Each structure stands twice: as structure tokens, then as C-alpha cells.
Length: 160
Image 1 (cartoon, rainbow, N blue to C red):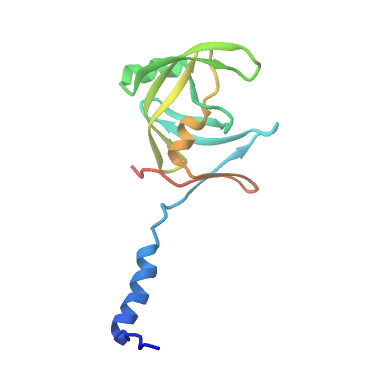
Image 2 (image 1 turned 45 degrees about the vertical axis):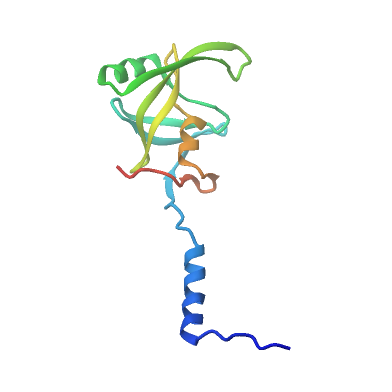
């Protein structure tokens, strides 16, 4: 049998320290955003839409888009915080199809400091409650929707 080359003890120590540290990637910090349960399995988070103000979003992981009303859009367009992207034909929860415009909102802040930028939002003609859908949640992914305690934990937020 041949002899195996021996590593100098300091080199071996350096390798043992460097490999584990280099292999670990820093995880983005999580932001826990309290939710309010309002019955009928609905949960809400407080937030702010840039150019509009404070809102209470219905959190809907089954909705492909964040939604706002035409009233909200009018204010956002005046402030320059929304730009037209496209129209889409969508299926609503009741099975009806509707053609709606989609606008890109400059930013939405969830809780006290989770900023999400360039969120596509579907606009509905009547005064709908704002919905926080996947077009925003995917920007914050990975995310955790917890009912006990009620909170939305998101990972990818800008902080200002």
C-alpha cells in the first residue's frame, strides 16, 4: 500500500472552517406581518399603496393578481404611481369572465416596512376591496401564510 500525503494541521483547519462557511448562503430576513381574521376564512393585512395611502388588503393566495378599484387607480394615475401594462380576460370566483385592465403599481408596503416594487394589479370598475394576490406575493416569496397565529411571513422585501 502506498502512503497518503498528509495535510499540514493549519491547512486542514482552514479547509474545515472555509468549506462549511462558503457552502452556506445567507437567507433573506423574514418579515412577519400580522393578519386580522375577520371570519369566513378571510384574513387581512395592513399596507400602504405608494401614491394612494393606507389600505387593508384581503390576502388571497388563490388570486393571480393583486386587485384595486377604479377609484384607487384614478388617484394613482394622478400621482404618477401606476402605468398601464395590458388588458386580460379573467375568470372570477363566480365563474363569470371579465376583461380588465392591468396596471403596474410603483410600490406597496406591507406591515411596517416590507416594500414590494412594480406590482401588477387588475383594476375592477366597482369599489372592490383591495386584494393581495400572487402578483405581489410572488415578489415576496418564499412566503408563509399562517392562521395560528394569523400572520404572513415574507422573505424578499426592500426595506425602504
